Length: 140
Image (cartoon, rainbow, N blue to C red; front, side):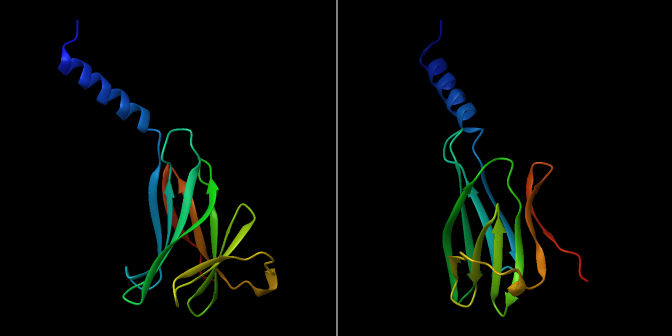
């Protein structure tokens, strides 16, 4: 028979196991040091719930903002990052495009991307061996 302490221990262990399937990760593309970056944040509040995604655009001390983008699944769908100009990047994941700028730390949907406008591929946010990483594209 379990005493009061045993019931609490079992309840805590059950809650811990129930939450162990949740995801909470962040991976950065550092532009110029730690203060200038694009950061992909993934959060899953409950097991089997959708994985919410955010892009944190940071150029400290000027600005830093977090923007919600489309949800994703597990394993993570790769997100490609293209350089578009000074302080401007294009992000693409599962056919959905965004423009992110660190000039004033904004992200917006890019509804009609033109491949002729894309700059060079900077790299890809991706999942490798169960870990979220940013892989830089080879320099040409």
